[in-house]
Image (tube, rainbow, N blue to C red):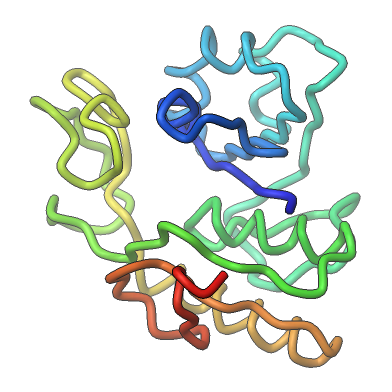
Length: 189
């Protein structure tokens, strides 16, 4: 199996007992604050082209031309990729380009304890209650509040693109709130 890890998933690697096949991050705040960790990653790392100002060249480093505007699902990852307000959408476009016929989402909760206006930048005041690790966006980490409505626009576009190509996206997240993709039982995988 191939797996796409996102943003600060490397915090989970020791507990998983394996590393994801790829690491993808397109959010400027996440990249800028995680530079030291990203430079140590020894798996293929896909980042927004904007990250070139922070990251040193490396054999495993790949830049993506991602944008915030011009909503579309790109089947060719060598062209412009709309971010769709979530790195998960970028991963779905990459997986499509790489030829995967089934994409299984795991850990896409699509709900956040922290509330506020979408895309507002905040600074964490303590442990992160929204992700799998308290230090994911821990104390002092700057991050933007999620834009779940825009994410759902992207997810619907991904669902349609996969369907039109005879492929599928399924959601195996245990207890997740995302309703765009068909659910599958994680335990059956």
